[in-house]
Image (cartoon, rainbow, N blue to C red; front, side, top):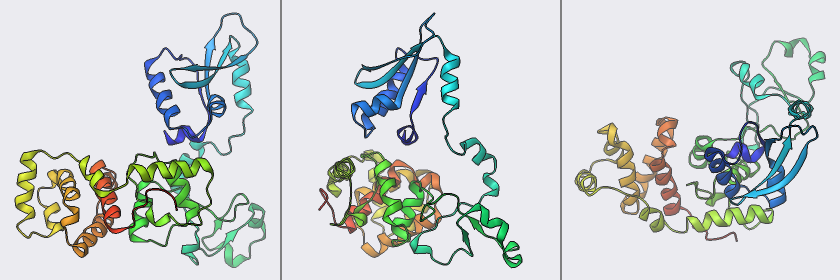
Length: 311
């Protein structure tokens, strides 16, 4: 869904009578931070019209979804126009050589990690012999920094394990691209000098309202009476938190939900030790589970300042 909000999408061979397309576009429209006219420019549906050689574009709306209806029988002209778009390096070319390309984050918090950054590919022809034998980085483009857009695991590990590692120039775009209802701690990036557009400010305020208290988050966690009784017995036996999760690994997902319900009753130092251990040792599949994300969000609501709106 986040990828679709970054680039326009053109449907060929489908129509809005297709329930799958309707559902996709409805989700896209509900979460797309654009005006009606902007949304219509980013969603195109090609409608086959027998005998029509010209291309007629009309802004239309169906079930709250605004889009551009492209009516024609001249598909070759559509392909020609698409072929003129300069999309940069195609993703398929990047994936083809991905194993040979080192993914790099150059941030103010990681000074000194790189031997050299070349500002132009042309500089490759003027390298001293000594540098030709070293690992170097070629920077394409004219940006001041080279950024790798994080995923959730990158973000959450930096948030807790390396709190000064990720600059706002990386963190805020990631926050704004995430769904407002997704469990994502952001308190440490909230401050009075934030420079945001009105749309970005509204999106962050919507997120802050959604996660206004720890109790509200805990109310949405469901645990069966049987599991609650069983886990309560283990929890009250003075077992260490790491051991509590380690035992019966198949129940780890349920146990992390149980701990979220009990998080305000846990010793803060032991809780911090558990959070750091999870982030360092668990694989990405566990860290991205809904219950784990809620647990890490609950930890933020318990230990950080809770904002109900931007200051």
